Image (cartoon, rainbow, N blue to C red; front, side, top):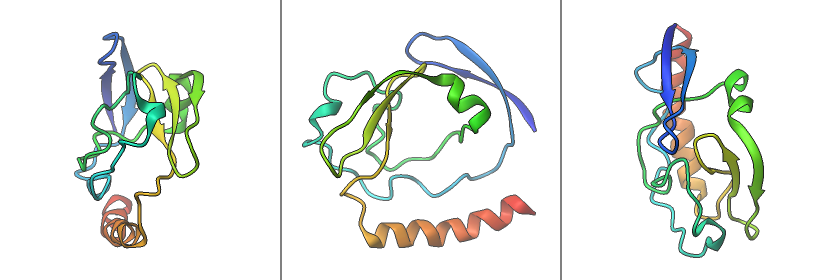
Length: 122
């Protein structure tokens, strides 16, 4: 376990959390670039992760004991098959499913997780 300081890039407010340090949380996500040009409900919104649509390393997995403390009022729902936006202290969080994710991507994620999970439990 380790004490960590998480800082909002929007207002530079700092939060102290205790967490488990692991070499890898999961595979780079998303597996492939997401095409967001038709996701008009994202336009003009200050996102917590402005490059969420590009494959990249997951830096932190926030547990429920802290996650609900960072949520704020506000939610944007787009068309069916697009993710929702949830307001947070870090900016708007993009969450939910996307029509861009196909069965092969899910199979790849599950395969990679099968290698990560045993390392964490040992």
